[in-house]
Every structure is written in C-alpha cells, then in structure tokens.
Amino acid sequence: MASIRLLLVGVGNVGRRFLELIERKRQRIRELVGADLRLVGVADSGGVALHPGGLDPIWLVRLKSEGRSVATLPRWGRSDLDALEMVRRAEADLLLDASPANMEDGQPGLACIETALSRGMHVVTANKAPLVLAFSRLEELAAEQGVALRYDATVAGGLPAINLGRRDLAAAEIYRLEGILNLTTNYILTRMADDGLTYAQALREAQAAGHAEADPSLDVEGWDAANKLVILAHSVLGRQVTLDDVAVEGILGVTPEMLAQAAAQGQRIKLLAVAEREGEAYTLSVRPTPLAADHPLAQLRPKQMGIVYHTDIGGSITASIVEETPLPTASAMLRDLVDIYRGPAF
Image 1 (tube, rainbow, N blue to C red):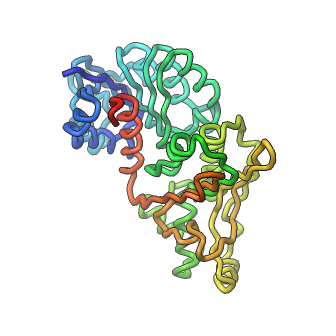
Image 2 (tube, rainbow, N blue to C red):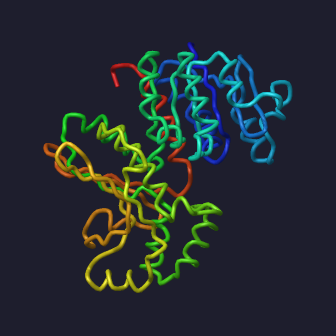
C-alpha cells in the first residue's frame, strides 16, 4: 500500500496525542485515504529522530513520557540537528507543526512551515503564531507551490470553527461572528460566577487541571482570543488584519460583584471575541461582555469553547466543544490531514 511520509515538529501535549492517534486510528486512516501514514521525522527542543523507513509512534510517546528527547532514540536520534534542519533535509509529503506558539517572531514554526511549503510539502498546523504573523505570505506560498495549508486546530482546539466558516458557509455573507475562543478565561469566569471562587482561586484550579499555563498572561489579558480572531478574519472573512486591528480587553478587571450584578439582571459575563460587519469592513474586538442567559455562548460550561456565525442565508449557526484534554486539538490535525488526502467520494 502507498504511504504518506510525515514530519512532526513539537512533541508536547498535542504532538504526543497526535502520535497516539495515528497508531490508534491506523486502520480507519487507511480506509479513508488509501494509504498508510509513515512518520519519517520528529523534532523536539532537544533534537530530532529521522528514519526514512518510518519511526514507531509509540516508541516516541514512551520516550517523551520518560522526560527524554526524541534525539535519544537509539540509532535514529540526532541531537546535532534541529527542527528546521530536519525539514530542510528530510524527504516527506506533509509537515505537522505542533510546536509552541512564539508570538514574538513565530519561530521555529514559521521557518519550518515556509521551508516545507517551498519544498512542495503540504502543511497542517496547530501553531497559531505563524498564521497571526504571516498569514497572507504563507497562503500565497502554498498556492504558488500547489500544496495545502490547513490550520483548523489553531482556533478553539478541536472545534471545527474555521472549517465551518470557510467551507460550509462559503456562499453566505457573515455579518457577525461571536466566539468564546479561550478555554482558560471561560473556565475562570464560569467558576467565579457559578461557584463563588475568587479570580486567584479559579486560576489556581485551572492551572492544577491543566487548563491554564503557569504564566496565563496571554489568556487572561485577551491576547490569545485576539490571535484566534485574527486567524478567523483572514481565513473565514477574507480580511487582511493584524492584532493592531483588534480592540482587546482581558478579564483582570472582572470582579465577583460584576458577575453577581450581571446574574441578577439575567446575564452572564464572558470574554467574547466579535467580528461585526460595517459596510465592507469588520470591527474586531475581544472584551468581557454581558450576554443574555439564553444566549448559546452564555450557557457554555467551564471546559467549553464555542462560536456563533450570523449569516444572511444560513441563519445563525452555533458550534461548541467540551475540551477536557488536548486530544480534540490533535484530532483536528488528523482531520485536516485526512481532508487533504481523502478521495472525492467523501
């Protein structure tokens, strides 16, 4: 049977689960795309593992669970190479980028994606930084090379927010987009409102459960949601925008008293990302917003994210997800991979 040669950059929570998925779903993937997936290269912060004949995903998961780099893999590990050099050297069909989002310069993900596209590889990424910083350039490069660039995993984890808007609503005019795109802030605000926790208590709980980073600044100050809104604006709304075009306010100023007052008025405060159409342009914002209790996004629980598209011909469409672990994000990467290769019957 034919094989699809894969490179994976990043073997953290999402990358590891992707490796587990391609082993667990091997037969189903074969049925969908008519080929086996062959992992020919993997990179983490300690180096790479390269083998044109294919690496065992489960070996790599075991290495990472022991706190070791893939560079320590016997025979195929290399500590003298990094992710970018792997992408430059390896012969592969598709690059998967699950590396951490570096919002300063996008590296190493941005250079890896550019190199892969330039070499004629398809790219599937869960890393939002390269798209926020260089969306148009990457899309143009993919088009020039005749390859696919897919990134549904960059917005709201496993929720098909981008695919829903870009593919299923392609013929519709979207006049308003609303989203709860950041799990950390939704967790904190919901626990504060429903259970009387202070901000500090809710944050500690979110960190202990793995829903918040040790440094939650990007989340609680609203920038993570703003990054995702920029990607939605480019990919779904067709607008070339930057973070400077988004009015951003985080949740640090939301007090228990404000939440209680909203509840008394039949409302719930959520960190809402909004794109509102005004003529031919969109106004973009991320800010704590009181929503009527019956609004679909007001009803989201602590471990949920969601999006609402208001359209001219498709009505108002809501999608949400419960994401307790990074598994749905990894599944979104697999979804994009399958979509690139599966036949027209699907």
